[in-house]
Length: 517
Image (cartoon, rainbow, N blue to C red; front, side, top):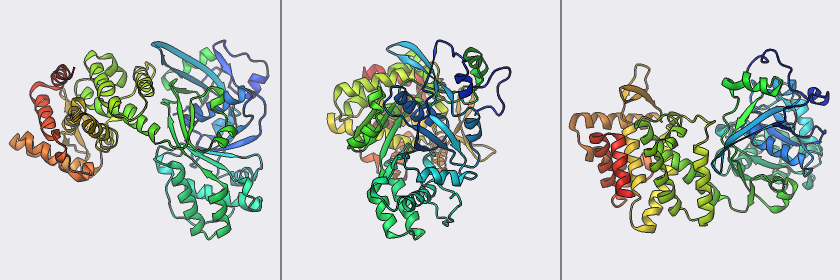
């Protein structure tokens, strides 16, 4: 969260400050203070887009390759437009992490945002921007729940509630203003973390257009003259550094209510034509942006390697006494488990070029070791069943298909997951597990929690590991298939559960690695 009041005793960052002769510290770079036309409408004014896309635009402007600014729109009524406008769009981004084994930090004043709008108060201004001949791109990050169809009436002159409805209304205003000119469509680049985000947004925009009876000509213009591109974003953004804010502002010499922090790594994969890449030349500025006609391999790489390594290791590490991802990489035992999972089991099963896979895997390790990011394992544990199904199971099945053998650490990760879900009801209606005499929350869908509570209760009565494992693996509502039909998987999970139950998690992992290595 950003502070509600300026930090005490400091001048506030804004354009007047920099244009009035203030010189930032030598370790702080600054984007261009030129006034650029507003070419980009951005739904979302939070930490992620400011540390990801707005930084990219800033770097590209600084190299003289784009020459456009961003208008940020807060998606909900209670947003950050007042703070952004108070600083005239400026804020400081601190990117830090490990590169080639060395700690690296950069500090930059980002200048790419011209202003921010609250659409519930400034709808007329937003409509005017939507009609502007300068506008070309629309970027968004309205959370995964933001791209969804929610029926609502069309009231000209009023701001709709949902994001797709806002887009439909604004596109209609543009369509009318340009007389349906096919050359005046917009390019949409959603950053929400859902699969085929651009296609979904387009689907819901057209659904609103039809529900509102805006006409076949408008729907045809949306279809043919506007580009809704699927994208994949990858950058960890801790955001406002509350614990360090006073110290950082003292070092910077000014108050910055919009301080933002991120890791160094960044990647944006955009599924779209090359001529659009030329219009938004982020890659030409040295930014890691990939335009492709098929983003599937890149999505698989991220989901299986970055997210899959998390999901396959963190529950065992937590039960082994570890609390954060950084601690996991610093612990000799669990660092070995991570390497086994990533380099020996996930990477070989992924159908991509070897050098590309190895480079990304090394980047994953450096990102996990980032000393500036405190990524709690319990946070990652949320909804682990669905995560394991999407992130780990495909690697396990592909490894079996490619080698005829099950990958032992990925098999063990399923046993560790089951053990993590061993819990008891709380007075507040939740479920808590226990680690070394202390409770921890287990968070998943209600039916998942009920299933594991009942199965572990049965185990408490009969001690039958085989029955517990069989009931879990055969539950198709959990996995979408009967995992007892995967040759050897049931036996491997039973052995993992027994080892954890008898010897404890750390000893079970040690035994697993000794056999695998």
